[in-house]
Image (cartoon, rainbow, N blue to C red; front, side):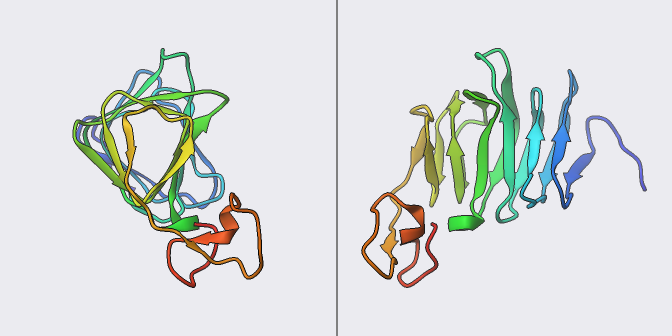
Length: 171
């Protein structure tokens, strides 16, 4: 219950299953995402918001891809802070290809696993994972990882690595 005031309300996506968002030509003032379901939240067209907050571990955000014609925009404040390993927040494409993103200048995110993103400005991604195919504006800080496999194994298998010594594999 309550009321919605366009331009000043906060929308919270807190579902326990997959959620799909289609804004058309509309924009959010503030969007908070706490949905940590396996299906996550999918933006099937352009995301446009002043503020985006996602701080729930294991949240998954999927952004529709385009040939540069759809640009997902956060114009004011971007706060994304996930955990480590399987608790990272996933930022990935919805569809095959690249998703285009315009965040605020001087943005820093923490604990994300991002792939196929083309950002228009630098994003410092601390304690995060480069899932591949991101442009040079995604700046991944140094991350220490520890070998935790109990027997000899494949160097490139995530399950053999952890962010903490003796921790659970799967960084």
